[in-house]
Length: 577
Image (cartoon, rainbow, N blue to C red; front, side, top):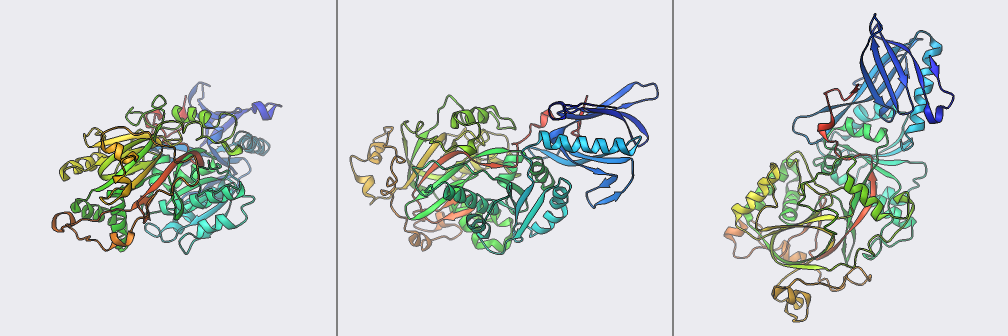
């Protein structure tokens, strides 16, 4: 048995250990722990290697954690818990499971030495691991199993890893957001939501709002570059929709998500801020949708008693309504040399596009969370482009927005942290053509390869409702009038001044509510609704005209992006040499 004196830089321990009466040679270096079976002729067989960063915990004796904790206190044994990987059919990511191996030492002194070295290695090489978490549980989301999922699957893992948790079970809407805005958060390393996308949105709004308060910034001013949040967000999926979890981890699995939180994975995430002159700012990461997606959400709210099935039903109802809406979209394009929504790339863990974007968005700071930089000012000198017409839907996403029913998502090549969003414009078309567009989301066909679909990678966009009596539409010198003549319009930057949105016209929402909304509205009724609503990550925004700006890497999740399944060589996930 050998141990290095320079434990902090090159921790090393090596000895003979036994696993089920089989002799192994175990070696702990600064970054890896591996063990190799040795037969009677002292020939080495297979080696299993686990990165120190993926060790979950070390316990004395023979211990089992899941599904129930069992322990047997023995003087010469210790149990190592670590991450194992396996794939799941039908998912885009990799399942993580809690692996464990029980070792037997020749003496208790050696056992204690192994435990000490392994725990020291965890602290030395995993500095981002959380010590204390603030956990919010939504007991009403999804199948109403949030508390059971947390206490049965996540809590035992947190306890094993030595993480303390302050748990709050919410009983009303926006309770988590209000807590984050007002209460003392000192001592917490991160915030965990046990629920769906709605619960995540609450925590997102609370953390961003709290961070801007502490930085004395007005988050409602579209000209302000928001300060990145220093607290990480973890997601334990337990909702009707878990799009954010699926798009950042690749699977909807509470154990996988809990293990990402435990080892302190850190995935930056772009956030789009949605501004309207008469409403507080709203934030979106997965879907900001007008037209079809807004109508589906509004329709589904009438049928919440149906559970998750309400989305399928509402989608059918809205499709049969055959609606389109007149409007004007103005967007600020991102640099096409950096990436494109049609380049067929995927944003996997360790994405090079997102890594380069960190250097571009925060060129003077080693950590984005430590510096407030106006990352938009140098980029906003581009020309705003105008598109006018009737649209089936207008949507923006800052991620692929993949889900089990749409494995590649709304925009398969979207990136999590490149400081841009993908703007998708679906113009009015024949119902069967629109159905083809929707169907392509469920398979590998390119949904953008259709003549009535446009997709643009943007840094900001704004939307105006277009009506016949709109003065902006009639004005000969307006950008909209120029667009009607068939020209590409370069508009004044609306983010230069805080009063730049005063030209937005308030939507007459009551008029829409009183308009016909029957099942076959587009077929049977003489007039369809003039306006739709915005679907902002599952929340209805009851107005039409907005200004949206993408803030690069505004928050960080306990995740690492979707792992490329092709990098896993076998079903165990343990690295064999």
